[in-house]
Length: 210
Image (cartoon, rainbow, N blue to C red; front, side, top):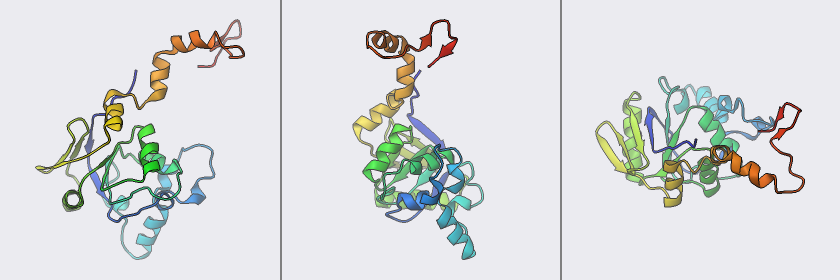
């Protein structure tokens, strides 16, 4: 069964600033592992350490943001190297939607492949949303992908998303693994016709490759 994503609701974190690159999102020294497990502990590690050293707090360290599900950002978010660890780290931190002025193309694509919507709003509207999040961190933000809007504290702003990406999210087509497993009998039927392909279940071995 595929995973349809048409609405994300929860608290929001306001992260101001443009051109936040993937090395800031997840510094390269944390990319040595072969899996993504634990990346969330290091998301924005250097920025957070710098803020703490100056006696302040990074937005991710503000009280009440631990369970936030929406991230509010500026323009060209996710620029720089194409590392997929950046959206992975954000997703594993609990974020389920990012609203910003614009996104780097590769970051946007990597995020979509894991079911992390990146929707855009105007600079003025992003300012309004960030003000709400900073003023009252407990405010619920609703990112309605199907309807194309974000609502919070009585404020509603329009959001944009390429039609193909929107359709993939609301239909569940973004989740290619789930789609494959949902039709695995067809996969096995085709595989059986291809020379050299090992079948999912090996007879008398008790081994399943699924």
